[in-house]
Amino acid sequence: MDKRKYKNNDYLSIIGLGGISIKGLGYKKSSDIISYSVDNGINYFDVAPGYGDAQDLMGRGLIKYRKKIFLACKTKYRDFKESRKDLEKSLKLLHTDYIDLYQLHGMKSNEDFEKITSNQGAMKTLIEAKESGLVKYLGFSCHSIPIAKKLIEFYDFDSILFPVNWGLLLKNEFGNEILDLCNKKNITVLALKSMADRQWYSDEIKTYPNCWYKPITDTNLMDLSIKFTLSKNVTSLLPPGDEVLFKKSVELAKNYKKLTSLEKKYLYKLSLSSNPIGNKEEIYI
Image 1 (cartoon, rainbow, N blue to C red):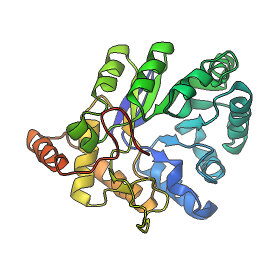
Image 2: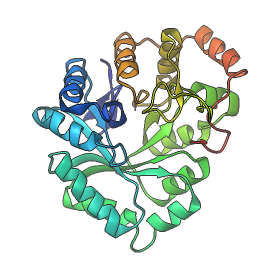
Image 3: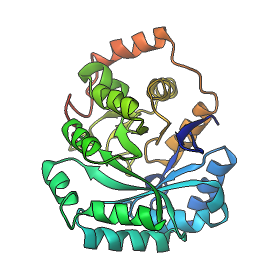
Image 4: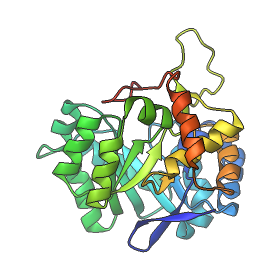
């Protein structure tokens, strides 16, 4: 599995395991997926308290691998008190005394920004945790162009977890300016929703219950989606939150080759009739 530079001497596998993929699978099955990941060159693992029992499962499954991997976690809380509790609980559940990357989760509104940047906001938790050695790097996940820009201007974050999706970018130009800004400011980009197809219909049976969107499942299009995302200044991407699609992504990424001009033209043509999960400014989910 290819690796790309995150920061300093830390390099990440171009595919990471998102905790949502092991949610609800039980200790045995989730541990098998974690072992499969490590055996196939995955060293980037991402989780959050909002992913059901994923923190507990990932924490137990990673105990014997902790020194070999890069562990990322998040907090959804915007205030200092609750985000600090969240961090302390995550450290316990993940069976670790530090987290490689700690992130503000799902930043989307001006209200989010105002709360985390207040005197007793969540940024205080992140900064203090980094200063004390509980956290190595700081970042945020974001689904809004204006809020991503405000956060980048506010603080020198190490990375952003951000949607980099061919349908969104080619049809609606979502994300170009953030990718350019991150490149200019040396902020590492970690990608979400690379293989998002469209929103679930309200009356549709969700065949992938851990996915907030209908994922791309066609092998060829999955391969092109991975290639497209990694053709940008992206260090690593997190596949859809499903065990089968995750493993499929890993196998495709093991044979990763650069996106060709013909493949990009094909995706562009396909994007014209696509129904992406956002517009030029924000993601709908």
